[in-house]
Image 1: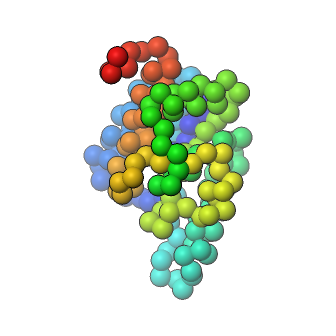
Image 2 (image 1 turned 180 degrees about the vertical axis):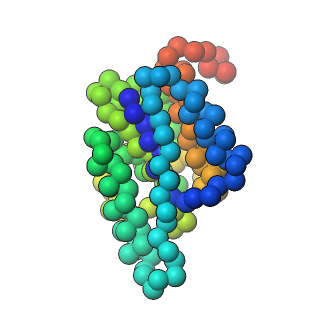
Length: 157
């Protein structure tokens, strides 16, 4: 199974990059994961927010076109999954041989059409999280969910 964290924004602080890298390195060899950073649309070119989000969505689609990726849009109005639910979803997707792209939007979020076409929408929290911290949370939860599905003990049991 291949996992991609597609995220808008560049030049994160080193500790954020190190946090994401640490969790992704812990994943088993049969579960490859990578972060794909995309540059957000310039906010000073006279485009509407809808036009900027549509342009960003087109770039996400280009990245997802490199494989048969199931798309999970990160959105505050998405479903709230606990770690067990995420683990179950990852097992289901793995069992049907689906690679998964987790998509984190830019400062204005994600294009409505992209969210509507996504296979799932996931809300990490009702809190507003900085983009870099959201990446860390996604990476950590992927590591924890995959560990749980592999039979490693969960800390609450």
